[in-house]
Image (cartoon, rainbow, N blue to C red; front, side):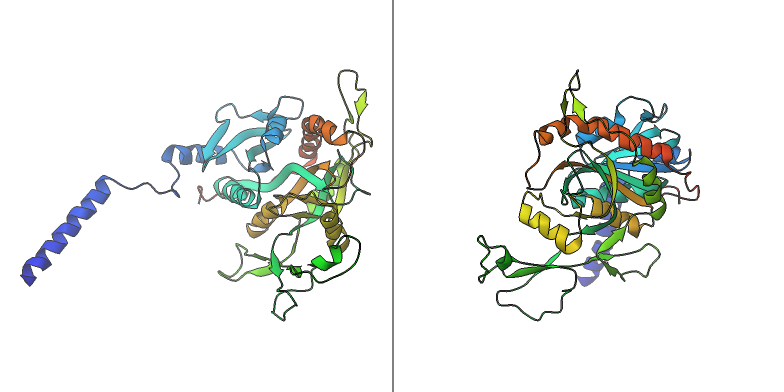
Length: 355
């Protein structure tokens, strides 16, 4: 009986393997051959600038027709992969691939990784919306370009009464008892949270060896290039007669720091905490994730964000309603002029499809 079992098992295994070959199971990681061939054809034309936008409104603004705006490729205007649509063409004098990431840090990081892995993307630009954490410097309607970004959503939450756990306590801590109404500091069971650094892995570093980083710099050359667009005129008014306008003339402004996290900040006290303790000027939900993915993949990166509210603070007049109508025009102006000023691309970049 034992001999019979021994001879039956290999036969069953052979039959099972034949079935696997005849009916292969699809892998979510696989790229369909047709899509892979399209990507190869796109990459054969050379290197690209990548432009990641946060949502549909920004995407439609960038893809709209106009001088210096996006012109789709005549042969392959778009390719779909992993539920993302990559729009292929030119922005001004440069080849460009535009993709929408969707809201939040995970979507932003995943989209960035797909973009730089599949395509010959030499540098990444990002455009979306943000809240102002510094109302004395950033007005509604301004387009802000931070020099650094932090993932401001990784915390060590201390137990009530305090503890001596070995977490980072140098960046900033938010003590809840300091924010009681009336200014009287009494004990609070929420205690305090300590902001923690992100762990960054570099493609040129040791496997499984990361570096703790809180602030991620944008590319120095791209940041210097952004200085050239600080003087462009952003339209402050809407309507046929241009009679309804923002309270302040909107401008493109380079600032020192921006923060990102998976939260929508509509709280003046928390906004002021971020500004006073970490010098954060703008708040959004994607930029730091894109910055970290680009840092890991050694791709130059810069972000541009339109200020649409004061993160819980009061705004002048009807600025919040007006800026939504002005955002598409501001996107076209700021992004279009930035592409006009961008330097030539690095021809040595390859995608994983081409390796």
